[in-house]
Image (cartoon, rainbow, N blue to C red; front, side, top):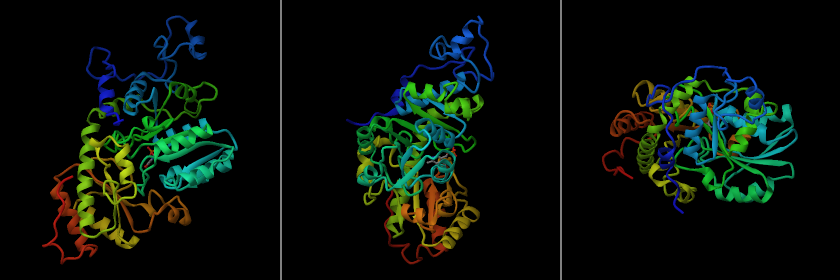
Length: 421
Ligand code: PLP
């Protein structure tokens, strides 16, 4: 079966027009909603009426129509029955895990996850809730199986891991989860459109929409994509982690993000196209580059089987330059002299963002856990942008690499640079 191209589902979804027939949906700025008859109110509280049952809304921390519509776009993107958007990627992850686990339950998670997710599972949940997490190499299915206990409720992984770029075998993990009657939660932040985790067997897909989906680094946002039952559970008036903990997305933000989803496919294709070429060129000059689009990447074949091919292998590569000092020197030159990109955390922006992972977005990990995940001190993560021309950007990168001595001066004339995928 060839993977679904999510743009078809997006294009088929009913369009939400604005209040006056506008081509864009209106922004519902109200925090509270009237009912025509007061007897309707208890029916909404009992869950008998809601957005899908009579078009009834209650209160902005519960469902908001604009956020709800963005949720429908996310559900179409991910191929899930339903979805709802949250104030951040972290709130989408924490609400999902807390909804699935009770006190003293257990999570099996990839040991290569974003530092905030690691901190949640490693440092916050155990003392507050007794929920413990076993961190495993998610590419080792046997290790995953062995780590499962009778208290395990969730297998958690990133589709493509931050920052090590290992790829989760989602069908394999799904088989294990099903055998044990537990849920597979996949963070698809690095690979929207490229991977459709739900189709590959994930139960719940979460996103930091702060990254590629929004694409402009101007909003913090997240999403939970799942079946309707789970989204309703998150909104339960007594026990719903979104309703009670309240990480609510602002409807203005929802409107803005909604307007950027139509060009997500174009952006992802261009991010992937450029990153593939840069990875090949960096490899050709003998650098320690990691990118799943390179045939010698350990998960290249796996990702090739699971991906929707036209979106490529993603917009992120890593370069191990050997030491933190050299990494910092390179980053400073790239930003301040060559204007290649910005030394900043985050990813999925239209310009290049780069950081030394071990001392930034993975600094929450203990030294042992960094080593186990494969995060070395000189590892530079680059989220390649799509501004400027590709050759202009390559010249900027190449010059800085030469200036630092990371690439020798001698091999310039005779090397053959790969040009296209
Ligand atoms: N998941 C991944 C893979 C991330 O890289 C990040 C942030 O960098 C998050 C989740 C958290 O997202 P947010 O910053 O939107 O809370």
